Image (cartoon, rainbow, N blue to C red; front, side, top):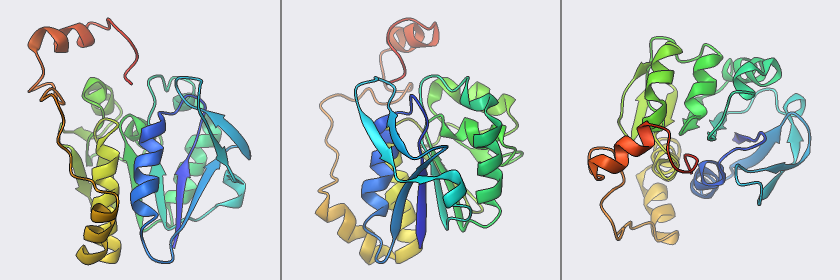
Length: 211
């Protein structure tokens, strides 16, 4: 089983690494990092690079497709090379997935039209504008399409997919061995739980990037 994780300039690192860590626990899985061209790709902080070992042309038909997000996808949403490859790869995938604003790329490629999907909470209106039925749920499955909300939810999406592909026992083993047992020091991980003024600050566009 070939699992392709897409890289592009200014992707969010955990969006890619979370699913990479979880899905790599599937027996006999080949997890490959792909981009327009082979080589290092910088993350959204411009301080970390992941290496794409394969180009899009070398991975035409993965079994599982994972599209991470980033704080500014304006260039990629107009990148026909990326969008065309997503359509081509999706034609033969068993699962097509995204994390955070990666769902905007799937939607821009026309793959989520009329489908239930999620994204980062700040991007839900844009996801709706691109034709998806946007929901604020953490992980959403609609047919073969599995989308995850913001950043850390990619871990949940990956673990969910491990269970679907390899069974509960394997998924439980992956969770155990990664010691994924969240106990956050704050309860502010969603707009429903965070202080209202903080939520409004981010809705107004103040502060740092999405990550």
